[in-house]
Image (cartoon, rainbow over all chains, first blue to last red; front, side, top):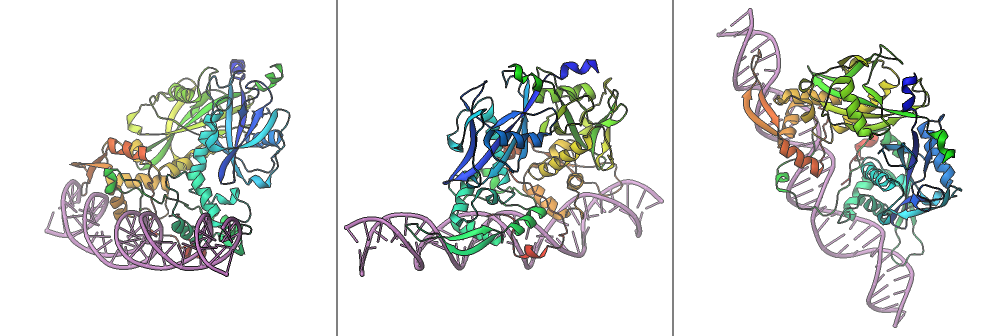
Length: 251
Length: 251
DNA sequence: CCCAGTAGTGTACATCTTACACTAATTACC
DNA sequence: GGTAATTAGTGTAAGATGTACACTACTGGG
């Protein structure tokens, strides 16, 4: 076994990309690093995995330790292992991501993190290590996820309006033209996933909107069956020539 | 930096899941391990990552060294890091997968691998380490991939018949009832991805089928645009009650 | 020449997608 | 109290796509 010893000299970490939705913006939770390397820079909440803990366990623990978030469902996205991504040596990191309702959680940064704060996705330009690349990869995963699962469940407060839900989809999918209001509502309502609460907004300076909540049971039924939750832009881009005849999905 | 030394004691490997299609069967390339642990067992071709090489590079190198396959496009799938998955210590493995035309490559097992052989997916029951779990994860990825990309490209010989292509799809998607021949052809042909070679099979004891090849340029155009290549079974299963009204895809 | 075996083809109906514009309810302000 | 501002809410028609379904066309072998 001696011949293998040279291989047992690397370290690995987990990095968590936590998405939230608030005030019409899609946000990501970042910490300000309190130790080197990259002390003082914004980074994803991530840290070393203990030798005796599984990856998923480590991701949860690290998230809790750095931000105080607990009981968050984390999903593995991809592993980043460029040779020089960490100045201390060979460090591979496994990226996890999650969606949460910002209002459900309170953030308590630890000593390693000077602060933890939600940042609007669009404004995040530079992060420590290769964390911007990791964030981008997770954002792409989210875009994919939103088409195959009713993500609103995880991101919106218990009661919400259809317009809020639509804004969420627009924030994630970033369609140039936004989504068509009537088509969006038709589609969402036809899925029978929403419960009409027969209540309306209060304190808004315009016609108040009806409030809805997700039907958790239906949601789980649908998840079990697996389904397709595609959303398309309200205004079609010009189709490239060859598309006019070509079809893009299979019977 | 001393405080971190305890973390730099793990190792990581890559494991490759290479799918091929041959004689109507979907196959996976396995090696018979020539060294401990699990000497003599079938396993995925995988090995340690060098300290100074990137993950993708390592996956390619390891595949080459163990099986003689080169110039294979490998895609990262997921990382497996259960604490006790390797008897020598903490070893995390990054799983890669690929699709190749079996006939395009010759296999040359190295000393580490006693042999390398294609195995029909359905018959693979037990593998070294947690490799069965890794294989299953990659197979799921393949099922997903087949719906979003014309994978026939990667798996079939340059000239093929529509029936062969259909069998490939059926092998991957494993629909209970097979796919409807007319609908399959209609769909495939309407994508303008195939070039009709105006040739037919020879030496078959029945009406010979036309031969086609993939149109590489069109394929790349389509890839760049991103498209949806869904296939459905020819016979619908009974719909669960709530589906009768609910729709499963979004406008 | 006929049998066995696979290749190849079209249509009608149902469902889903898309584009599109006006009325309704509320508050703020004058 | 009227009106302006602002967002909520609603339906329909045309086109594209998906699905079910059964027969004829070639070829080699006997």
